[in-house]
Length: 264
Image (cartoon, rainbow, N blue to C red):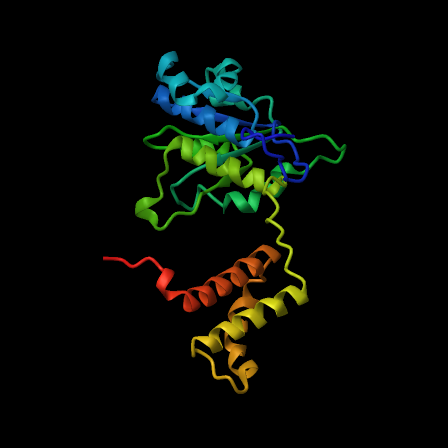
């Protein structure tokens, strides 16, 4: 697989999230619908379903969705009520920012992600709806009672708990992507062989003695603190060669001070 930058995609094989659709209840702004479609495409989710949208300005939706999510808008479904929207799904997860004894129990996206990717007893995926409320008030308590589970995205404090609609969709999709195995592997660094490190330390030690930074007697002892710094970074062969080049240039500069450029 190649990425948009034509580089190999080093992620392991991911579980599909196409069975997880996004349901927006009474969205007020067309650009928010488009931005939610873009988040769906970004994170590899399924279909976009709207319940009684207030506005469906195509130009605004497409501008916010960008070209990469136009297919999500093309496949978008518009329904009359939440019951109709949720009818095909075996699992519905309502998202809310508001607390309340009758609105929970609350889960974080990370806590739910693996469960939403799990297969049923027959090995088939469980069709799931992620349900988000209107921009101003979110899902009502009655709406949440139509859902099997409730998710709440953690924020700094209650005063900042309200998220933009598309941001909430993106964060849910991100946690699902990571749980599905979508996190790229950390870059692997091959440390330099021991001999290359020793040769670099010899060069460095001789240079530091030459400029008077280290004493000529018992140099290895005084070099230990410098070695600790380099050992923490697991130097590569190229980095060892770089430091040896710096040492050579320092020694050349000391022997050729007359050839060094002088600043004004």
